[in-house]
Image (cartoon, rainbow, N blue to C red; front, side, top):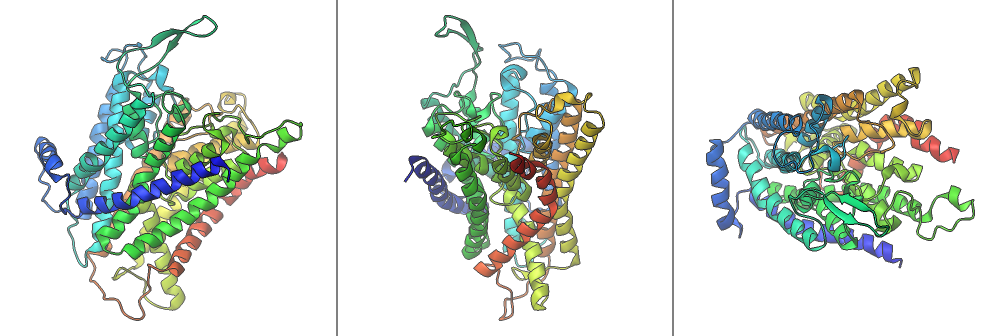
Length: 565
C-alpha cells in the first residue's frame, strides 16, 4: 500500500483511538464524577471561581447559561479590540509592528471571539507578541465556551424533567483547566522538541546560502500552535499557517497537529454518550459523521494524488500528484487529508494552499463547511448535528404517523420552528453574502479589481469560500481573494457573529424546552434514535438540506471550473 495512504490511516485511527477514552474522561468531568486529576485541578478551579465571584454549585436555566456565555464573550471582545487597536505603543512588541485599523481589528476580534480565526492579516508583520497572546487566550476562551454549551445540551438530554441544567461557569472552567490546558501543554512540548520556536525575542538575523542577510520572524509559536489546533481555532502565528516550517516543521508534527485538531470534536460525541448514558446513540452519531467525512475525504485525496490533468496534457510527470501550493515534506495525500479534516472540523488551519487544489477538491472543502455537522468544532459541532437530529425525528414521526419524540420528550411546533430557522440561517448567510459581493464586483469590476486575482469561475469560488468559511466559523480561505478591505472585514465580521451565536442559542433553547417537558417512557411504538436506520435518516436530511441549498452556487463556481478545464 502507498506509504502516503498508510500515513492517512495512522492519523485517522490514532485520533479515534485517543478520542474514545478522552470522551469518557470529558463525560466524567461534566457529570462531576471523580477523576485522578481532581487533586491537582480542584484548587486551581477554586481560584478562578473566587476571582470571578461565582458559585459553581448554583444551578442555571438555559437562559441564564446563554446570558453567562454572552457576557464573557462581550467583555473579552472589548479587551481584544483595545489591544489590537493600540499594539503599536503597548509592550511586547520587539519588531515594532503597527496597530490595526478599526475595521481590521473588528474583524480579527470577532474572528477569535467566535472561534473562527479568519485572518485578514499576516502575523509576522501585523501582530505584536501581546496581540498574539491575547488571541491565544481567546483560543482557550472560545473553545471552552463551545464545550460548556455542549455540556448544557448533554445535561438537558439526560434529565427527565428539569428547569435547571447545571452551572455554565462550572462547565467552562473545567473545560479550560482540565481538558484544554493540560493537553495543550503536552502538544506544545512535542512541538518545541520538534523545532517549533518558543521565545519572546524579536526577529533573528541570519545569513543565507547566497550570502544575503535575512530577518526571520519568531515568537511564542509552539504554545499558539498547540491551542489553535486543540480548540479547533485554526489561526496561524505566521501568515502561511501550518504550511510554515516553524509552525509545522516535519511529518511528525503534521501528525501531532492533525490528530490534535480532530481529538476533542470526536471525543465530545463519546462524552455525550457517557453523560446521557446512551452509548449506542453516540456510536450512531459518530457513524453518520464519519460516513460524511469519508465521502468528502476519499475523493479529495484521490483527486490530488492523481495530479492536474492540464499539466499531464503538457507531458509533465506528476508522480507526487498535484503539488501546486503544497509542501514537499507532507505530500499531496497528507495535504488533501488535512484540507478536509480542517474544513469538516471547522479548525480552518492549513498545511497547503486551498486555492491551488483541483476544483472538485475545493468543492469538497466547501461542502464540509456548508454541512458544518460532520464532527464540527469543539462543542458547537454537536450542536449543529443536534439540529439535524431534531429535524430527522420530526420527519420520521410524520412518516410513521406518530407524535415525534426524542429521548422521551415530544417535539412540537416551538422546537421545529427554532430548528428550521437555525438550519436555514447558515445557507442564508453564505448565499446572501456571496450574492452581494458578486453584485458589487460585477457592477464595478475596476473599482473592486483588487478583490480577485482569478476572475471567472474561480473568482466566484473565492468569494463563496470566504463567506462559507465565515459562516461555518472555520477561518480558512482561498487566498487569491484580496480580503483586507473595509467591505470584507465588516461583512465577514457580521456573518461570523450571527453564525456563531444564533446556532448556539437555538439548540440550547430547544434542549432547555425539551428538558422542561414531562418525560414519556419508551414503548413498543417509540422511534428508536440509536439505530442505523435512524442514522441513515439523519444523513439523508443533511444531504438534502445541503444539496438543495448550495448546489446552484457550487455549479457556478467549482463545478463550472471543473468542466472548463
